[in-house]
Amino acid sequence: VQHSRLSGIITLLGLGAEVNVADNDGNTPLHKATTPGVLQGLLVFGANTHHVNNKDETALHIIATSSLRDKDQMLYILHSIGAPRCKTRLATCTGGCAPNGPFNGKPPDQVQVMSRSRINFDEIMESAMEAATLNNYQGVGFVNQNSLRGGRVLCLDGGGLRGLILIQLLLAIQEAAGGRPVLEMFDWIAGTSTGGILALALSLGKTARYAQGLYFRIKDLVFVGNRPYSEKPLEEVLKKELGEKTLMSDIKGVK
Image 1 (cartoon, rainbow, N blue to C red):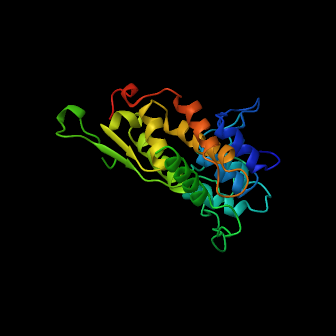
Image 2: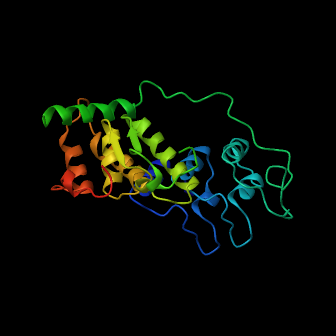
Image 3: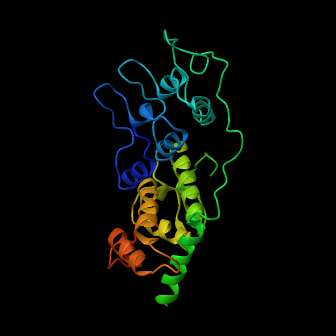
């Protein structure tokens, strides 16, 4: 994090590294973020914006009082997701972090659009899934499960990037439900393509956060070299993560 090596950060978090671990001074990786990319990467994996270090400083306070080149954009990112301002005004507080401060940061001048020359995660994920298939031919309000007629169905679309967005939505639903596991909220779970991977992972008791890491691991292990991508690496990853001999009958509690 200190060297802003985003690819290494994503790899470690995808393998299950704890995003909110604190050092001897109480600083988490979020406190040490110095670029918008690293900041966003940590937030995607659940970095806690409320955490304070031994000096009662949040990541927002540290960024607001820094001289970072992209400070205004980083403040905009944090404020846009509801990161809290300092509870009490510290001696070093600025308008970007003070309790009643007027400054919420500055958005980027223009949206950064992915170049077509770069790898499109959506396309390569679908490519590998197609190869494998051919080769192997309540809002926030929840009601009591016993009061329902029929069943509650969770349908998950396919696509690499869409899958990651789905996971973020599931994490938000889970948080809104007081931490209740996604698996307990539905009677049926269905998925298409990469959404099917997510559906299987959830059905086997994996958490949404675990599934998020799995998606990134698939990206790193499967999409190597030139297209068309071999389905073999994907098969090996799924065997390892979901079980080589797992049957649909092994799934209990949800259909």
